[in-house]
Length: 286
Image (cartoon, rainbow, N blue to C red; front, side, top):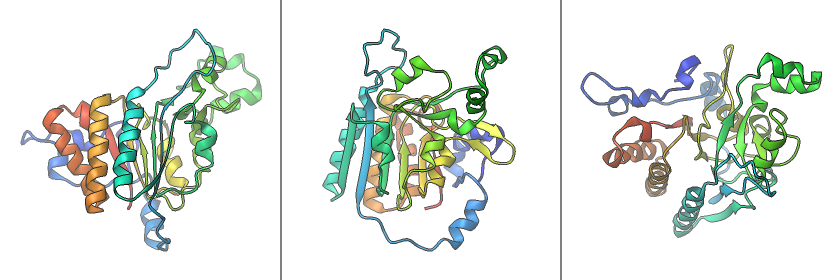
């Protein structure tokens, strides 16, 4: 399924069915970001398998200065998530790189060299359209930046809070925020899986024909085969349980899609409401 319009904002798997269950119990929905991906997947030659390398980011230090305006909350739970994931992968013979707190920087993300797994646990964001009164105060070049949806969505990394305290629109004025525009240029040609374990990473602007212009498409354009991301704000404990259980199953079975479905179904035992397990979606063709 290639979603468009409002379907970019909901997870069809979490829709109730007449039998008292959910769509996830009765159907296997495979999501892609664009229908042309079906053709590209068919004609794309099989690449040489990447080595078992994983790069993980978590709990960036959002404020590097002594700012009193600290509206972005730190994410210590994501640091625990990354550390547990690192231990799990190392037990299975993977070579891992871990970047947390101050080392979880935009510069470090940009020098990635196609790890088999790229896992990043932080806040995602989307900036809505600016008010007309705000646009009038901008220069012509500044106003053009606000019109590009790929520059209005991204991931917050080290120093992001300082950037947001200085600007409402120019997120590339200094290091701290990886926009979708920049994510498209990452080197992920041999990357099997990208996991955006964050809040509201699925949000993006709707545009004619192409659907969501945001992180979803950006990471797939960069070369990632499969992307797992959240569509709305998620509970920390439920997220960690889901993500780590998914990895355990995938590493044991090598079946990425079934492992993700099974992990969500198991999460429902402790967290039956879709608000917990229905946030995360898998996009792409493995």
